[in-house]
Length: 631
Image (cartoon, rainbow, N blue to C red; front, side):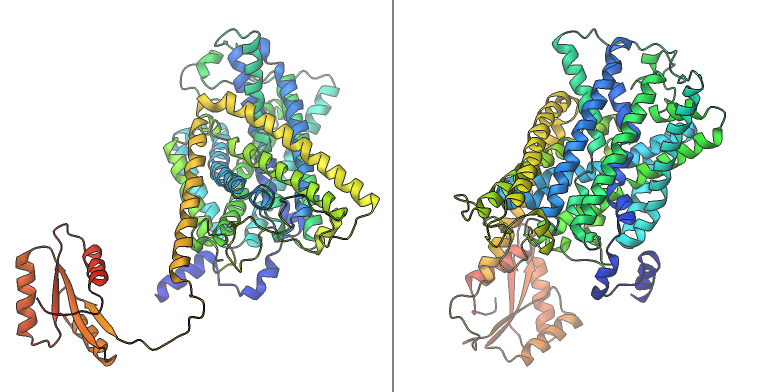
């Protein structure tokens, strides 16, 4: 036991007192890499996903990447603006689940939760596998060890998160800020070289792109939409900040909203810059190397690796620095999920839609069980898909846009209720602000959407006091932002479903209802248990009229005799030893040993032809409570 505790302290660190929870709160400079590493790192492969899809149509359609990039940047700006409203309106965190629970009801909330949980698992798998892909682009000899490397990195990430959010955040800050710095350095070098007349071409620029089919009319539109949907991976992880508002230093909402805005600016500029360079350098990529005229099995460099090699030219050190920080930030991007998944699982556990074990913090004041569960799920996914990014990416972003749409629709209803409250009348059927839907949270649980004094910065009037004209204009503006965001993300969700369904996304479409049903089953179990142990009106402790004890035994041994001796000290009205036997010979042997030792406690032998122990005992207790005897 002591050796186990010593090993745990060595790996995880010494336990932290609950009173030190405030010391784990994050300043903006640490929160940015902790919560935003996923959307910041997604720019490393989002452009490549667009080019991979457009390559199916050959060189003639690659110019559509410009339109896809512009659409994704606009979408990113809208989603960031929408989630900034959530940070102010719901400083208690919880994101799409809490917003949906309060405004759209239990079904919408569980749908959002199932989408987010699946998305977090996908985030870990895709981020780690893409990081390993960047590593193998610089060192092709490692290509055959992608699965082992991916699993190793997931284990390391889980271990670092088990040591605590703030401690892991310091480690994650270095590669995240280094990635941002190297990307902007690459932009600067490319700008200077092109301004001085240099013609820069990617290593794949001269390779032919063999089109799979001729795309015209509706087929061309669908191809463009599919490329746009694949590039929308750049938006993954945006909601993590609104989920984790409680982890920020005060003022929580303002710091979270500011972090979200900084992330939006960085992600949009890096993504568009990388796409622009890819188009100028004529970067060509394909899922199958033979489509570019290469020999089968030839390792393919990622789009970002080609851009970096072309930009830095003979400055090999900068190219390898780019690959190193890209691999680092992509692997560490999974940290967004390692913060979001355990926190959401804790909220679900508190509302009795997930096992209660997920509610409690571990030794280092993090949700340890949720971290371990996420790591195991991600490893299973990586192994099942053989660490192939192209296969995994097809399952991605379905859950993202489901949660985006439900969250923004919930915020629309939230602001409408605030407008109605500001005039002194709540809309019919509206739940009061901060209240969970019927059956969504256990009695006595803190409301998941609870507001705080920070919420007053939204202009909301939870006390019912009429708001001024300026406050109403502010609410109208926020309502418009969220309404536009809800419509836009709903349209993108339809596009993603249509274009990705037959390419693997159907697995997510099946998994979400299964997870939804599982959460409802957990809640039903807890409700059943609560009803069984509920105290009846007026019930008080009282002395039992009779005290009957059954002691389960398997053989005549010292522990059995000790249990019988202890039972006698309770002075029961009756005491019976009970055993379960599979055959008659076994029963006779036990009776003989019982009599040989002169045990003065009646022995009841229960027959079990189906080799079960629990069911015969439970049936005996139900059918003959308080009655004993030998047999």
